[in-house]
Image 1: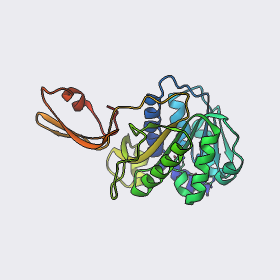
Image 2 (image 1 turned 45 degrees about the vertical axis):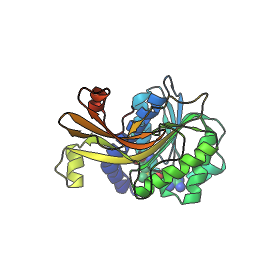
Image 3 (image 1 turned 30 degrees about the horizontal axis):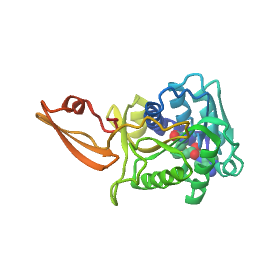
Image 4 (image 1 turned 120 degrees about the horizontal axis):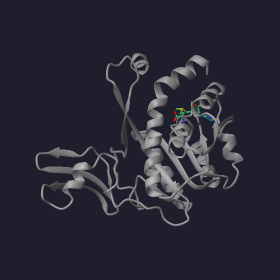
Length: 272
Ligand SMILES: C[S@@+](CC[C@H](N)C(=O)[O-])C[C@H]1O[C@@H](n2cnc3c(N)ncnc32)[C@H](O)[C@@H]1O
């Protein structure tokens, strides 16, 4: 990439991918209370979105990134600051020679989808081998992004990993053809961001799908249900679409019924 192209990616996409990575890391953290990673490995670091997101939650992290593009790696070093070491290298090479159990947390944000299917699967496999406690994969919130997440979820479960988020269970995903599980995070747009995107709105909503995996010891503290759509609010009632261990449901909570107050404060993506 030219310096200008890398910078353009950084300015237009970094705020949104960093916000999505942070939102997913917060859910991982909620399912793994007390998890305090000391080191993070970030795969396909780009300008460092997942490094910055993780550092905002765990300020003392030692961070390593794998990135094939020199300009991107340079931006990541600037964005993530001291303690982060973006390394020039390919994900394919990482998959062939990943050190075993070397990092508490391994992240791949909007990166594995750039690889072919078998290459991406091999990188996920290597990520599971090199992580001590947790792996987080974030993908665009599209049907294609979600189909990769579902595939990696099955692969990770078959290797003995646990799903920490977003799923409230480890049974087969109940989402059927034509639908996809994704979430949304709202972020403010700076003046430069608005200008570059040719948009007037002072915010944007980034749609993402993710998979947070815990490698033990023990099971993660999964929620009993996950809100998987915007709540539908009407006078005196709230409708929530929930993913639960027993399937996919829309539940209506009426004023003065149990659960109404919690339903009013629920958001798309929140735990129940
Ligand atoms: C869409 S960007 C995402 C960057 C960042 N993780 C984020 O969330 O904004 C994908 C990054 O993965 C890097 N990448 C893609 N394929 C790669 C490979 N085979 N080896 C190393 N890096 C790769 C690209 O250079 C790019 O910086």
